[in-house]
Amino acid sequence: MPAETLPAKSPFYTPEHLAFRDAMRRFVAGEISPHADAWDEAETFPVELYRKAAEIGLLGLGFPESHGGNDGDLFMTIIAAQELARCGAGGVLASLLSHTIGCPPIVNVGSEALKQRVLPPVLRGEKISALGITEPSGGSDVANLKTTARRDGDHYVVKGSKMFITSGMRADFYTVAVRTGGQGPGGVSLLLIEKGTPGFTQTPLKKMGWWCSDTAALYFDNCRVPMENLIGKENQGFKAIMKNFNRERIFLAAGANGFARVCLDEALAWAREREMFGGRLIDQQVTRHKLADMAMRVEATQAMLELLAWRVEQGDTPVGEICLLKNQATQTMAYCASESVQMHGGAGFMRGVKVERIYREVKVNAIGGGAEEVMRDLAARQFGFYA
Image 1 (cartoon, rainbow, N blue to C red):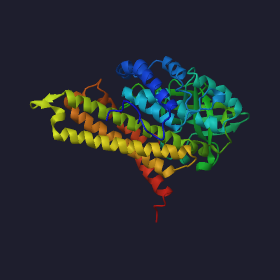
Image 2: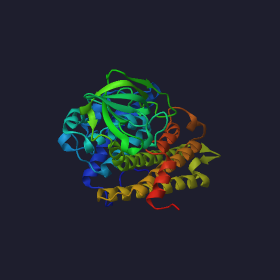
Image 3: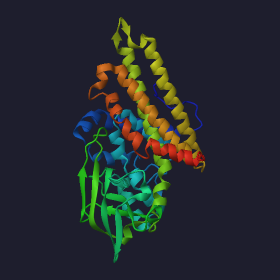
Image 4: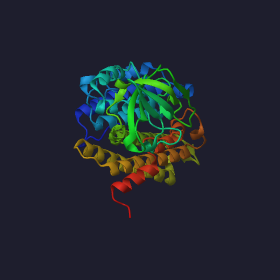
């Protein structure tokens, strides 16, 4: 059951995918896993990791070659998320890959000048990108955001705040959702706001998990942002925000199931070694049944993940199914993390153990990228489950 290799016979993975998997595995084993505990306790990781990630093609994954990317497909993204999960520290994934939510609006609707200015240095690991949408008043209700941007000559004057922003302290470029028009989605625009803009300040936040992920509150006190930093057209930012959700949620689901598989692998290894009542833990039927239940959920989630990724690659847009996939993955992660900690007993409650850290990170996965309740309601609307 431990996922030492991808399936030998699969319609989804090519030799190119397997080569990338091997490169990712070496990268995680050499550059991340030995330091994961120390980075989590320090609540940061070295910025040099961005450059190293760029060198193996991780940062450019899925971005256009014309701007420094490598056009990897969704199965490359799944591999990246699940290999990174092997380190057992979700905070590394979150901050290291914050550009995967900060940069897509620039790719999809930004001007060529913005693309040339932002994308190459970010994909080389020289600059860091973040996305600023969530506000103190709410996150999932994007259409009702309150941060405003009013025109003043050739600038926008931005006033408001953002909350729970990944890479919020050390990012160089912030893709920020603002209200330039009336109420509702039709009044939302996107602006590129750069570090050092007068009136732009940040405050670091303490969290339950993802300790090594840089998370902050952002404050905009009449920040003057050049009009050329408008991403796409004015009052059409909501569409640009929604456009990237399918890929983001597939990535989140892949990572969550990757962490669930780590919990299963750790539980299996522990059960084979731990002795009690005159035998090993795995000799107990209840232990084997727990492992089987964990495996059942992981494999079912992986099958759903890969099928939906294939559909997206064929040009389909299964929005409702992807919402349910994210919930399926986060609930699988929650189940496997809980059972693995339980199986470890007191050892599972100790810092420095992968399953303890993953257990603390369950909830952020169930909330980020669309809370489970929002995912259910969006899926229900997509499927026509209404009166």
